Structure formats: C-alpha cells, structure tokens
Length: 275
Image (tube, rainbow, N blue to C red; front, side, top):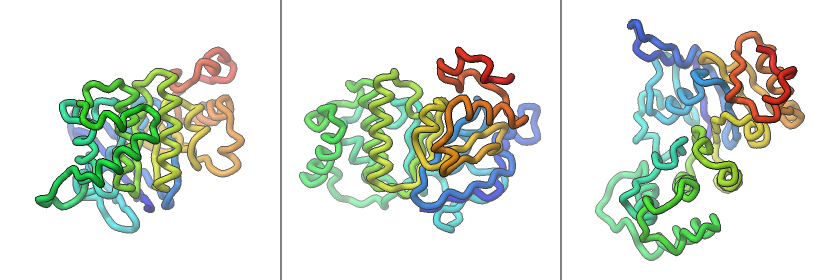
C-alpha cells in the first residue's frame, strides 16, 4: 500500500503559550512494500509521523493518503483495517486481563464491521497456534493464559503477531524495541524482519538505535524539528556506517547531536561527533 504525506503540518496547542510545532510542511512518499527506518532526536517529530499516519492525530494542515485515498479525516479505528501499529510499551498493544486467544481474536476483528458470530472457532484457534508456533516461545500451548502472565518480550512478540494477522497494508513500529533488554531486542528484531517479509507491507520503524536503522529496511530517514533532513536509500544506505551517519547528521547544520541516538562504540570516539 502506497503511503503519502502531502505537506503535513502538526501543531499542538496552536495560538497558546504552549504551542509546539511537531511537523513542519512535511512531505513523504513511500511506495507499496517499502521498509523505512526513521531516526532523530527527542522532539524531532518521529512519533508524530506515526500518530498522524495511524489516525491518532489529525494534521493541522496537509493530507494523508493511502493508495491515493485521502484518509486525513479518518480516525484511527477507521484506518485499523489498513494500518497496524506496535507501540514502544509492550503493555500498550494488549489487554492483560484477557487471554492470548481473546487478544488475537480482537486483532482479527480490527477494522471489520461488527457482526453476531463466534469470535473463536476451531479454525481460528488452529491458525493462531500456527502463527504463535513460529515464535518458538511455546505460546501456542498457552492460548487460554491471561496476557498479564507473559514477559515483556513475549508480549511484544505477541503484539507483532497480532499486527500481522490481518495482513495490513501499512505497519507502524514506534520504538517497539525500546523497553526490551538487548537479548530480547535481537529476538523481536528478527521477528520484525520476518513479519515484514511475509506480509510485504509498507513499514515505518522509528528507532533510537542507529545500527538497527542501518541494518533494516530499504530506506533511512533522519528527522529534526519536524522535518526530514536526510533521505538515504539504495547503495548509499547499504554502504552506510554508524560514524558516517553521525557525520551526515551533525554536518547538516540543522540537527542537534543527541547522544541518546548513539551506540556505545560511537560514544567512545568523540572525534566522530561534532556538537
């Protein structure tokens, strides 16, 4: 599914003393099936892009289009059949008091018209077990367990499976690895890559990890102050290193060097970072 942001501006609390411009006349065209990673400092506008595409926030100006359909005024629940989102907090994407199978049943019904029919059937349970078995976490044998019993990594893995159940046209990953330990991050990162390959959906992954931003995806965007200041793809992205990306960012003249973006290896070589 093609995703297009056409001159989108997003202003919080306009006309007040607390006015904040989150996105500034931002235009972005992502072809169907492309995997885009996004980096930027806190307040750069990364999550604002995610929320605007998801329909959680309506832009102050500009248009959002999915396959040339103007969805700017569509709320998030109306876009849910086309757009799936995985949050940074593993607890945000599931209902802890419900079972694994109940959460998956809700995900299957996302964006559909409500009808009086069984939410859980033998066929659906079999499909759920098949998807969960691919995780290698044993969750396929725990369909009736409350989600509250799962670890953070298990919940985020489940959320990824749920996001792919309806084969969405657009997948939004909003720092979905941020709350996980390094070992669990690697596991969920592998699941992410596999999901994107299987569903072949248009994907935006916001991350604070430059290594992940370089290693995954077809295209890398760098944001600052509500704008895209670098758009790297093809051979340029494949040849990119973390120090080179840092140099590209800090040499642009429009970016702040945020140390939270940098891996430990980069932090130990201050000559690569120009404040």
